[in-house]
Amino acid sequence: MRKLILLITSFLLMASTQNSQAQSEAPADSTAGGEEGINMTDVIGHHISDAHSWSIFAYTNSEGEEVECKISLPVMAYYDGQFLFTLSSSFDDGATVEKGVNTYYLKHEKLYVRNGSGEEVRPFDFSITRNVVSMFISVAILLLLFVGAARSYKNSLVPRGKASLAEMLVLFVKDIADEQIGRRKSARYVPYLLTLFYFIWFNNLIGLVPFFPGSSNLSGNIAFTSILAVFTFIVTNFNGTRHYWKHTLVMPGVPFLMKIILVPIEIITLFTRPFTLMIRLFANVTGGHIIIISLISMIFIMKTYVMVAPSMLLALMIFVLELIFGALQAYIFTLLSALYIGLAVDDGHEEQTA
Image (tube, rainbow, N blue to C red; front, top):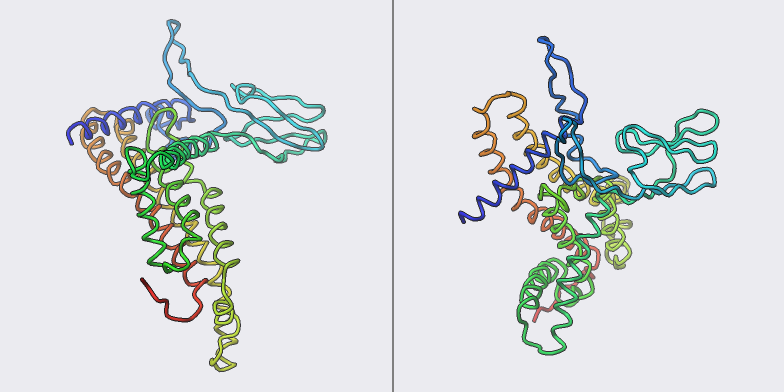
């Protein structure tokens, strides 16, 4: 336990180092005394937003200049019949990239293009950003764990080592599916729910690691959570039984005047369910990151060593809670997805359980 606390504390110290680096990059507000203040909006935004490069560390050279070591990621875009392929380092220090009559540049880590008419527009951007790389890392971890465990069963049906861990993880999600969908129908949806749970959980854990290859905020990206919610929406409604759609759109036995009120409500409910899934995951993960970085930033705002101990202690407590909430948010997302699927595939009869 003591080693775990020391490890978490070292993580937070690294996070505070990255935070101070973010503050030096963020625009500063002038205070009444002429000193530079900290713009917390820019600091927090820099921490939780996506980026076209991955910062490793920074140091001050012999000439007193701050040098940042980072990995430049590919920038790929399409606009006006032209493809752009370059590295994010091409845009360092506010530089632009010319492509024909079009000028490409980054503004707040978003790619823009100024065309020949002088208009500023957004091209079709399919760049590999930090969140995308984080997603690839989580996929690689999942494949190493579960594919490796599956191959071990070729030699022996008795799980050992990696297979034992993987089997425990699979059975945990299978129990969720059996309870919410029913044993007779759950096997079809366990692979989806299994992927959903551990994909979200692993990305939550990666986002809490304050150094490369962590520090991303994939689960706190609204595009990521919305796509997962859309997948659940598709799986739920495309597998809906006749009983499900009948009671959603027809409502047998309900007076006609009541149907005029209830049917639109049921149709709206079909879309509010994935919407709540999307917002819940996005808000909780983003909120946790904001609280941690805000507590650490108190040291630099107050500019006194007195704040180091209470700020780090509070940040440590929130960090431990985030480790728990990372799994909890994945569990809630998976549980509600299984619940919605179970409601859709229910045939209206009592299921005989073994």
